[in-house]
Amino acid sequence: MSKKETETKEIPDFNSGDTVQVFVQIQEGGKTRIQRFQGTVIKKKGGGVSKTFTVRKVTQGIGIERIFPLHSPNIEKIKIIRRGKTRRAKLYYLRERKGKKAKIKEAR
Amino acid sequence: MIGLIGKKREMTQLFEEDGTVVPVTLIEAKPCVVTQVKTEEKDGYSAVQLGVGQKRNVSKPIKGHLRKGKLETVKYLIEFRVSDPENYSEGQLLDVKIFSEGEIIDVSSFSKGKGFQGVVKRHGYSGGPETHGSTSHRVPGSLGASATPGRVVKGKKLPGRMGGNRVTVKNLKIAKVEQGENIIAVKGAIPGSRNSIIILRKKRNKKKKGEK
Image (tube, rainbow over all chains, first blue to last red; front, side, top):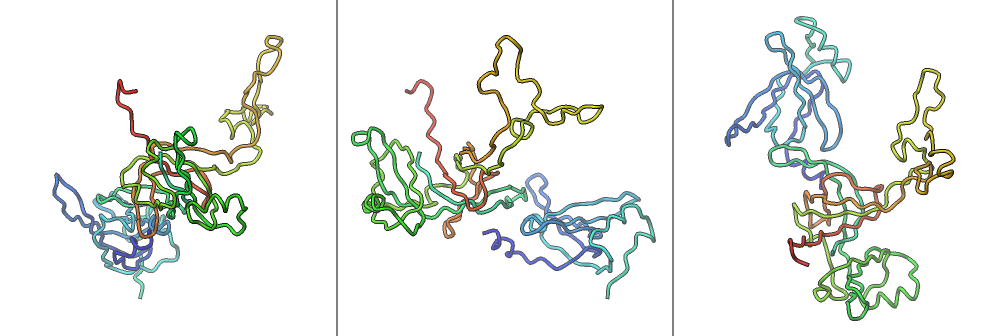
């Protein structure tokens, strides 16, 4: 049962270090609109339906991290902007870095 | 009230339409056969006996008993007290259709056995201090007063076997009923290990005030 439901939506294959744009459905006073959240994936966690991923972005010097359930019906689609090359799966070190040091090499 | 006999599959999560995550336990409930209907006049109380599963060696008395439900073998025979035995007949099949989404049910099962456990795990005692020269880390402490009463009170909570009891969890909500696969998703956790037998029971209709 759980398997069928996870396969209904197409989820692109992405990993830590990739820059993605997440299209999130937001309910506002009875209306739904789509908000985009763009940032770097710093971790993927869990398995099956309970899989989640964390996207980090820095706006006006303030780091913002959002955790999304991968199979949530609120996620309309995930767009991959850039593939990153990393040497670890969890990029927690980005939290302590700013500017040029927080850059991730592009994978090719 | 009437219910079903099922098997615990696993825990997982479901999404509501607005994206809320609901933790659920999947229970596989294959169709159960009514093997006996007990009535007030005949048996002194009214109940429905359900049978499910397969077993290799069935004793002759059980075989004879199952003939009424036109069954060969059965692994579990479980009775459900009902107030309307006339609505059931021997040989009738009951499946997940008797439950609906959003319904509140009671679930019974045997909890996981924990073996011989101390008082901290078994009864939630706080134990003694860990440091500052203390050696009474997880001990129960005093068992009672001295010469009066001069004995340990009956029922005093002490170490012993924990788990493996029949536990009923009441008021669980059905999150989903999957008819084709005979699966019921119940919100929250239920006792027992995977593949253990689960008894799902409908709730009795609440009596109104003043009604007897």
